[in-house]
Image 1 (cartoon, rainbow, N blue to C red):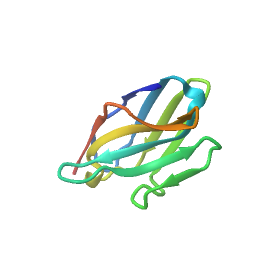
Image 2: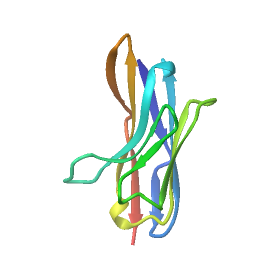
Image 3: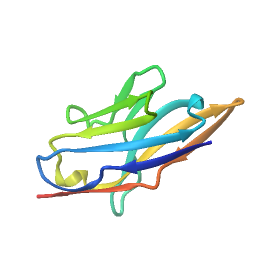
Image 4: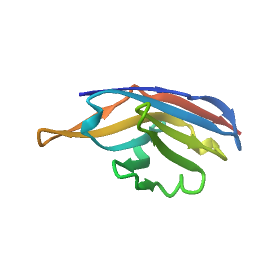
Length: 119
């Protein structure tokens, strides 16, 4: 079991930047993948960025070149640096961690943090 607590959301003007943080506690040794998803009103939740335990990353096309996902293993924190924000980036952003322990996979979600980009 892991627990996820996000922070860093807020209101920003278009073109601005925000950094989201996700503090992870619990059985962090079981983590195989970490990521950020977002869900805008009336839309499905979508992957924004992911980072594997080995460090490789993957981004949605909408995030490439603007967002950077990183992980601080010493602090057990996952970050999403978001630059050149656009109004269409407005959504609730969720931290996600996939764990495998004893051969059993588990999906773990944070409570979400609101990001609002004004035009």
